[in-house]
Length: 166
Image (cartoon, rainbow, N blue to C red):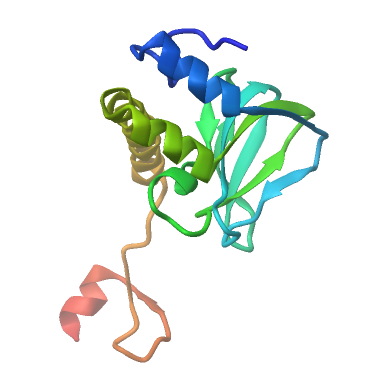
């Protein structure tokens, strides 16, 4: 299986990419299948081949990202020294994925530091782009004037004028 050069393996040596692809497991999932839950041990990294997967935070199920383009990656927690996933992943529709086991992928990367560095730079770029999109979403969300708890843990909504009078 070969991914386009624009994907996570762009600008890497063909033999390095081939070795990574040799450890990949192709898996299919159905709509509603949960790949991992927030807080689960981060054992795998994924590349979407087909379908859509939503990444969800917290118990409220707030969707923070939808993986919908072939070649898009997720499950990065397994690559960056995090023991657990920072979000949950659930299939929106049936999906086909490449799954990479953390330890196997780390061994391939460790054997070829030059290509490994390019791989991690690509992962950093992907995460950076997601962070910038998150910043834009936060910046466009309406916000309260001031909320303060005065150390009690109880949040009191007050206006800036009322706060100045205190």
